[in-house]
Length: 102
Image 1: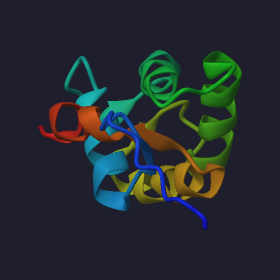
Image 2: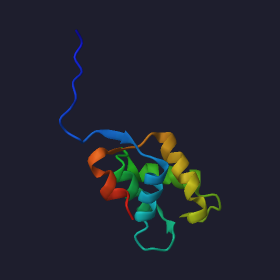
Image 3: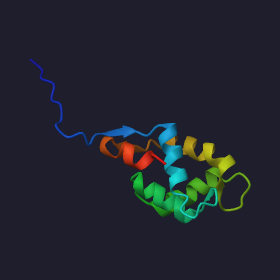
């Protein structure tokens, strides 16, 4: 007979939703200028568990920065979120509320 084992910890990782990722990226706009630079992207990706967050931040910029100004602005944010979802980033259940609320 197979037995289902349920972990006692609530620290289970779950795929990040569109809303959560968008909230995280907005929260990482530390200087409040409405756009993300490579340093801010690196911090967000580090939180999401990227192996090489600096390299991944450069890839995100290359992917989402449509006008080539070196920033992901508000109108480019949806493309950044789409890219992050494609990469399959997850978040810990216990961190969902604290990190993604703005």
